[in-house]
Figure 1 (cartoon, helix red, strand yellow):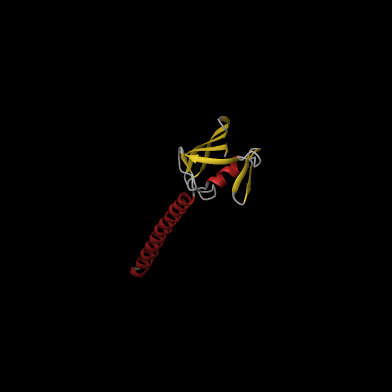
Figure 2: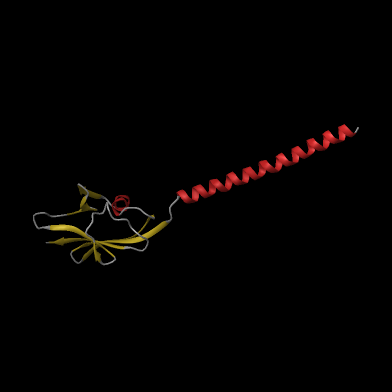
Amino acid sequence: MKKKILVFTLLASLLAFSGCTTKEADSTDKSTTKEEVSSSKKAEVTSTITLLDGDKELSKKEIAFQDGEKLFDVLEKNYEIEDNDGMISSIDGHAQDEKNKKYWVFTINDEQVNSGAKDVVLKDGDRVVFKLEQF
């Protein structure tokens, strides 16, 4: 009789403990999955991009993008652009004019940028101005 009670108690204990262990493992797996998803998604941020032809404003957009994206990639997603070896030659049909020496230049937060758009990483709140300027 004592053996039956001992065996029954042992089995009941094993079932109880194994049930707890499984639930903890499940909850740990779910939280790990949520953390992985959160860390794999980069925060969405915004910048303003303005297009000018001389002093004439062609367009102005507030653009949402993933933190850490390059300016060139953001432009491709939001405008119709053409480029020659990474240098932007046309934005939304507004093309450079080599005869009149008119080229796209850009500033970020009112500072001239000496890199190409493929090299520049946008930051939240950046004010980007592309201007067709005559040289």
